[in-house]
Image (tube, rainbow, N blue to C red; front, side):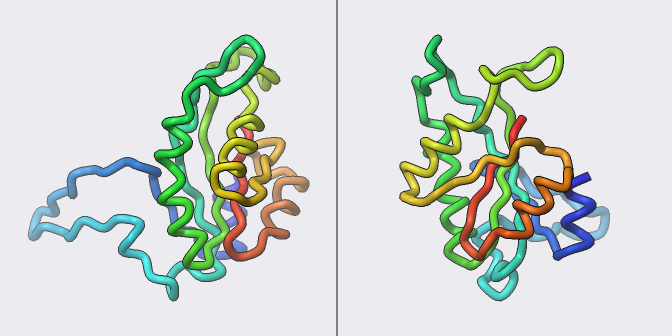
Length: 151
């Protein structure tokens, strides 16, 4: 729902944090492999970029992050996009909720730690669905802002 909404509002670019794939071979010719770094400021400035990040970090019993490797691995890509003027929506998951949202699987600790590492506020949307609240939060984003979509 959110992707469809964003596509109507703005051209959306999608990328995968820290993931490199082999180029697919077309029947007639090889297509050049592209990465996030191939996107220019002209292509990114003012655009909303949805990026899938692996932010499924381990937490202890107090819901504190015990290994931030997955967060630090995503930051260079996110910083590149922000530096080119994109509005970055990061989606991920944490744990495996069984019957709907559970506080112990919230991405809020990830957003907080990522914000500390990037020295900027990282908002955490309350849902990954295109609710009015989430649409409003996305609409209020400025160039260079980052928001994590909740599980």
